[in-house]
Picture (cartoon, rainbow, N blue to C red):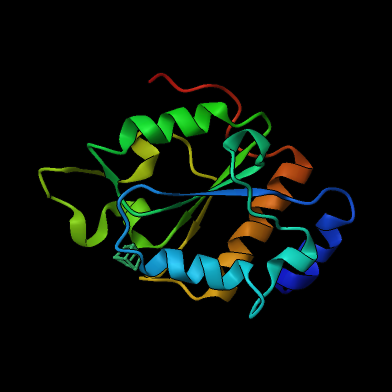
Length: 154
Ligand code: SF4
């Protein structure tokens, strides 16, 4: 099933609202996320609505490695999201630190701090792959199989 079909099926029950956070990305992944949510690929018509507050979101989309400066903000944003919630890590940076690994200002992978439900590979991934990741996260939420249940310690 392609991501559009999957999202259409899921959106009939509940539209997955998303909140995007850049924890230190080069902006490459953010541009692809924006392309996925705006009219070219148009996930919004399938109910994937970008929210301005984490308190209104079901899915957290993360780009970039976690840096020393963004770690606390990331945990704060994560803890503000109501349960159930899912996390999608977009690109190689939140998976491993990627080209930023080893920098003295970078922690690296996101899963050192919060559980990740779906990884979208690429540097950067294409918008279609990001939509597939969002669709998989929405499916996990619909089935109650997401990893994220509790607050994490700040
Ligand atoms: S995965 Fe690549 S494109 Fe995405 S933030 Fe990291 S370096 Fe930039």
